[in-house]
Length: 496
Ligand code: NAD
Image (cartoon, rainbow, N blue to C red; front, side, top):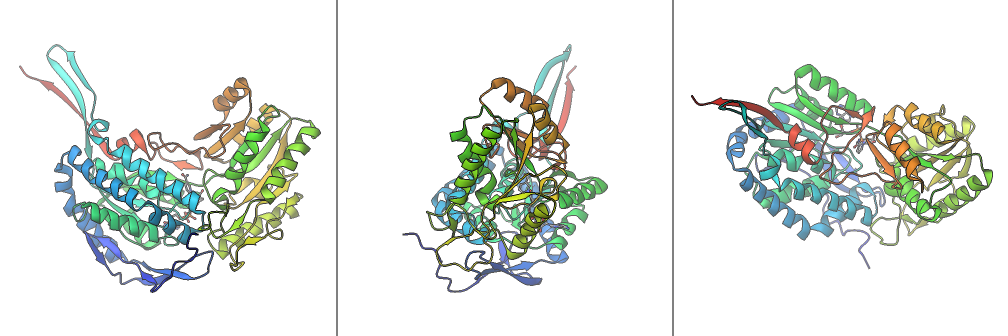
C-alpha cells in the first residue's frame, strides 16, 4: 500500500541554486500547500532583483568555459543526469503529485516525458552539426556553424512543474548555454529536486541555476542585457507580455500561451476507443493541461447518435474516481488551489446563466475517495447545448469542464475550430481518412490529433502552437530547440 501522506518532519525551506551553491533568499517567503491534504509542504522565497542580477553574473562567468567544453563532453553531464533521474524516478514523481495534485500515474508520465528531452539532447554532437557546401564557386566553400549565445531564462507554469522546463533546459545546456530556471512559485519543489540531481550530475557551477519567485525575477530577466533569450510557458496574457518585452530589448523568445482545444466527433468514429480517450483528454490532470479537451463538438444531425454517445460520455465521466493522486486507484486529483476552483466554478455558472444545460455537475455530484478535506476537489462537469459565443466555450477554463456543442457537418466543425482565438491542439475522431485529412489540412492549430485526445509531441518533435497559443517562431523540444539556443554563423572560404 502506497504511503498517502509523507511524514513531514519539517517543512522544506527552499533555497535558490546559484553558482553551484544553495543560497537562502532575502525575499518574502510564501507557503506551498498540498492541494489534497491542505498541509504546508514547503516555503518558497520570492527572490529579489539583486538576487537575479547576481545569478545572471554567475551564469555569465560560467559561460565561456562551458561553451568551450566539447559537445560530446557536455552530453556526458546529461547522460549522468538521465541516470540519476531514472534512479530517482519514483521520488521525483511523488513530489509532483504532492505539489500539484495530479495522480501518481500522470506524474510518472510527466517524469518520463521530461527524461525523454534529456535523452534527445544527449545526441548533441550530431544535432549541432551544420551543413556544408563544397564549391559554391570554383575553389570556394561555404558552411554553417551553430554557436551558443550565453545565458537563457526558462520560466515555467504551474501545471507541469517538472517537465516543462525540460522542454528547453537540456537543449540550452547541450548547445553550450547557461540557464536560469524560474519555476512557478505555486509548485517549486520538483524543480528544486531536479537542481539537486543536476548538482549531483556535476554540472560546473553557474551553468544550471534556479531562482524562485514571481514577477520581480521575470522582469529582472527581461530587463537584463546579459540574458540572451527567454523560453516561457504559461497563460496567454503573460506570454504576450513576455513576447513584447523580449521584442523591445532584442532577446530571442519562445512564448507558449493558453489553449481552448476542440475535440470533433464524427458519427463514424470508433465509439469504444473514443470515449476513454475523451476522459483522459478532458479530465486528466483535472483538465489543467494546455492539451486538454475543452469543447466537444458532435457532428451530424442524428439525435440518436448524439444521445447514445453523450450517455456513454456522461456515464463514464461520472465513474471517475477522485481523490489523493498518491492512491493508485485514483483517476483524478484536485485542481491546484481553492482560487482556481472558484474561478472554474464561475465558468460553470456563467455557462448555465448563458443557456447551457448541466448534464454532470462536478460541484455537487462529488464523491471523494478517502478522507480528504473537500477544498480543491471538483468532479468532471459536462455542459450541453453550449454555443460558441458563451464564455465557457470561448475562454480558457483550465479545469475539468466539457462544453458540448453540435455542428451540422465537418465544414461547420472546422469553422468552429478556426474561429477560436487559441490554436494549440484540436483533434478529430473518425474512421474516415478523408475526414482526417480534411481536418489536418484546414484546421489552424499547432498540434492536430487524429483519434488522439492528448496531442503531446514527443521530445524530438517541436511543441507547436498557433494564434493566441504561441508567440515566436521556433519551438521548444528537438531540432527547433537546438536552432533556438544557437546562432547560425555562415563561413565562406577561399584559399588562393
Ligand atoms: P501564468 O502565466 O500565470 O504563469 C506562468 C509563469 O509566469 C509563472 O512562472 C509565473 O510566476 C510567471 N508570471 C505570471 N504572471 C506574470 C507577470 N504578470 N509577469 C511576469 N511573470 C509572470 O500561467 P500558469 O497559471 O502558471 O499556467 C497555466 C497556463 O499555462 C494555462 O494558460 C495553460 O494553457 C498554459 N500552458 C501552456 C502550455 C503550452 O505548451 N502552450 C503548456 C502548459 C501550460
